[in-house]
Image 1 (cartoon, chains in turn blue, yellow):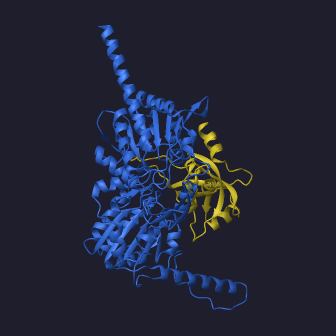
Image 2: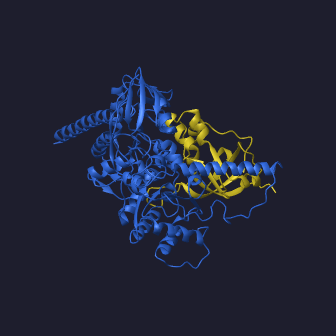
Image 3: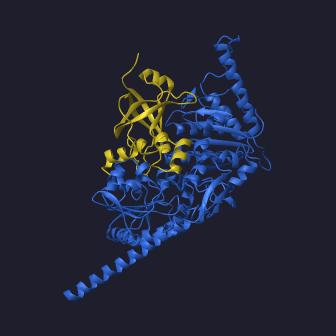
Length: 493
Length: 133
């Protein structure tokens, strides 16, 4: 059976490029090195949830249609719309995204990617204060202090710790995996002891509680090797792995970061707690930050989706700027979709703006709050929507989806997701990174090639090809309209 | 004393089960199981008289939805509930973008009440109920 090495996993922003895929009779049968999500995608891609033919909604139901009919219908919708929204783009290749920009310009719509509900606020924060960052390779080899703030890599980027941070064997920094396993064993032993005591099998003296605050271990920062700090509102799986876990009250990350900034600058805080965290704990964290040789902060939706949003990012980056006066620090957003970074890059490279680009005036305009797809949908200004490689039907608030389905909805996706169920014209597409090759950007802006490991099912086209066909048809329809107008004018004269 | 309703702060976010489910297919049973649930603090569940794996109704000014209550497996998080991203969470979460395009998916007020007799809607039923499709 042919084994394909170094396959890039098309799921999250980690873009792990060490996957080994075994293929038999044009089907993936075995995956090596991947996480649970990787296995689920590579094994589940051919499952029963696949869309097999283009579909058009007739009398309230989606019925199969020919590709030509669906392309014509979609092009007609887009060419006749005044203010269409073209949303998604994050789970497809840069090549398809490039055609998307062309299409958005041609139809005078709003081009927006999933960053709007993900790291859009991070982009706004970066546009305010800049970003001191680096590649994941630097972190793997050199970082001795890792902070995950408002993110849970164990759940959303399962191999991030293993490939790029605490549990990876770097050139200058060693893996903490063995220490973590020992900690787990000690924890399991303690639990056994406790249960034996509870059942009356053993007698142990009650120990004084070392830590007055639940969920926080006593002083750890004297520990050697790489240190892992997790800051979150709940004890996530990643928090369980951390050397130090700080449980911040919801919506108070901004205060906590400003407090840390003050402490890093050797100022004293005259309160006992900030955001529910005792100041002595923060002092310990500040000490660890300043004493690190090279630290890195990864942040996620815990900052971008809570109160403050882009202000949280601004202050996080400002904290890094302050720390860089004392030592070396970098910061990086934990990007979700595998090519959301690529969507930002392609959009910025082609239009000047990374997301929320409005072409309605014939030239690109960017004004978050006005031209962000979410706001356009919530205000009900859209009169058609094209969704590709994303699922706003499942991930946008109800009112936005209500306004989306009031007008024609075109969906391009390999799977029958919530948006496809709500769609009016649905195109099946091939899986990028499994059935189609392409380029994707990792969360640290490193472009990586996506491999094609199997042939797509017969008749199923790539996103890029579907978009090109729609674009060509839009141009034909627009040319016809212009001709008709000219003829009418000539007749009138 | 068992309370009728509990005022909480709603968080939505990722779980590994949701990740596996979404890659398997949004129409899959795995995705339904992973997303149509709410993690609650053990003490909060006791206050409401809700047992693990029984249904609760979560309401916000934006709507209400029936979900399966599951005890949060690690640590305590009093006054917080956590729903994995998905159509069930989005049936109730805030759509205030504060003019930057990002709705407040985390940290908004909500109420939880026991609903042991109410069924959790499947994705098709939920979409039909909300959008008529």
